[in-house]
Length: 93
Image 1: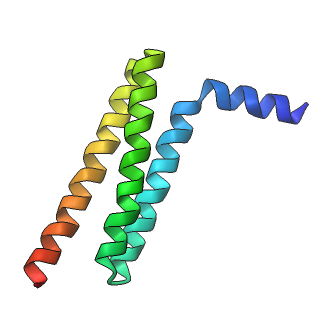
Image 2: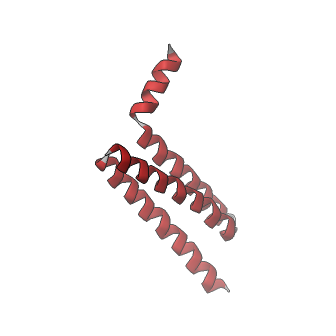
């Protein structure tokens, strides 16, 4: 019973799960950056970007336009963070 309720919830709210998964990779990247590992930070955050790009694609297929707009905002934030980390690496060299 609980399994069917959970799978039903996942089927209805897949977009939220995808955004949360992408943000988890993003947070892992921020943690790596805090630990003075900018290369690892960019790698983790690139996984987050790939995840959110897949979510955006699936949102288009499912015609979830509001969810697509939220995913694009998350994508923008993640790409901006990667660019900041990359810029800080260039300044340090």
